[in-house]
Image (cartoon, rainbow, N blue to C red; front, side, top):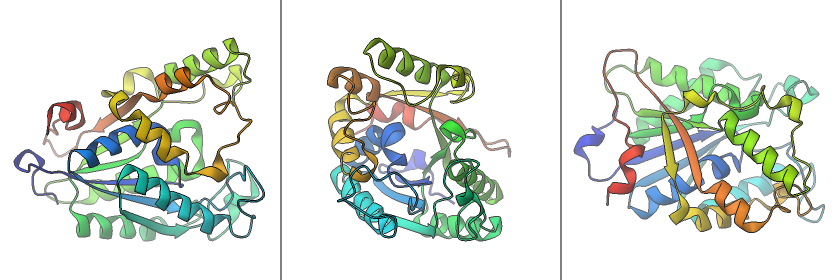
Length: 276
């Protein structure tokens, strides 16, 4: 599908994430770096984040949250330097085990073939060298994260010939454990219970690529700040000491999926810092 990343001076990348703001924590620095090195990036949200939190009732209502979050996504991407923002149009499926999982308009209930046809159409249109999506765990098991991971993986597996490099954005278990420890030591109640730490996140040895994005972390933080409805000013992340938060956001983790056809994909992201 691609033109051969090793033969191109500039890369093309697509992200397929579930909700507006999913791009921020795990890959925001890498996306900013790609843009600043002159590479083309398109972000795709599978849902509009209809049932996310509303941090301040003056920002949105449950009825218009999906529209507000779309606009927040565009503003966040403008900070990063990404002008091509797409939405697949599905309803947010909500957290695992909630009634929103059963909504027929949700991504969770969508016909797999329909979603995969949308993903394939974008890949055929944009001819990416790199595709980003959630890892198999979805970070913490969110139904939409897991669903879009499966649909993207299946779509790329179905492509004959050269395939884009497929990277899963990871949150290693050690990452969550360190965050829990840092928050607890700072007197902050973490957003997840200690007894759940072994159930969330990617296995530490699953990660293939660890990236230092400290040169781009300020852009990453500024982009994240545009997702205002999702940022509780009194929440655990907002109350972390700024230097601790900056350090935590300065490292990103990925898993490079290898095709089963026998071709081996080079780790483009590992060498990105050395490319102009």
